Length: 426
Image (cartoon, rainbow, N blue to C red):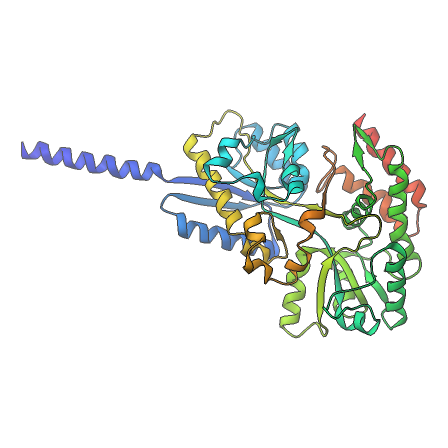
């Protein structure tokens, strides 16, 4: 009898242990984050596992950024071999939805972890939807900003008492400021990455949206007067280059070096370079005091190109996710959003409002200064041809880059760009 009782107790204990083991969910994670972004994300994953490892453990893999990542995401989901959660550029959602790569995130999913639309900037939340359905949870907003050398702007009378640039709004005013900076001894008023389509797209799309231009609508690229607005946006940058106010055919590292060396008084680039300048300044290797602000308003109102790193749940065909697993995935997404202050150190603006509105973020400079971009962000057109590493970016390289570098007439370049992309729709 005692033997039977011992056996029963052992069996019960084993069943209890088995139950505990089964209660722990492993969340398979894919991202495309390298460099400083990758370091920060790995630290967040380690912190999550440290806090939640008894119940949920993230098993993370980093894959190659760009087209290779999105191709692998699509093919793996199609055969049920994708991860449980992955990072995704919001600009690529239309393609992901069209290929059945992504699972809809429902109202019940959001409610299960206390996330709601009101916690995000309206444009950011809408950009995470396709046809009114939610397919992503934004993690950040990353945009282009204007970096500036405070010493050079002060000497040119372009720095206010608050340490922020002044007199830069308006196409003519900005151009005059560039000339004043050049006349004051700078080789260039502003350095730009003028040799590649991705950087030029970001500037172009900002200037187009400041005119309320529509790049793609109702199945048509640059229809009606949108073409004229696109030409005008392209001409602005072409004039900078033509008049020697910005460098021509300059690669990415060289565009940064022109600013860090003091040869360019300002620099237009993504928020992701904030850590570069922060680190150089901390090491005493910059040689001047720098700052960063939202892109000036060249036309009718503020608007700046933006994208978001976001979280999505792959639609793994033939592999249903258990309710427990889905809840664990949502817990991971919610935790990352609520701890995104650490991610802001990479220059990004937290998408999650409570973090963006926190005293800790408002003390983070220059991020807090340019965080107004959350309310003026212009996300990429909703099209399967748009977004990171897309045909639109390719077209920007093929047509906009020659146009701004004086190798092609802006009017002809934008017409050719429109025709090229429209042919891919039809």
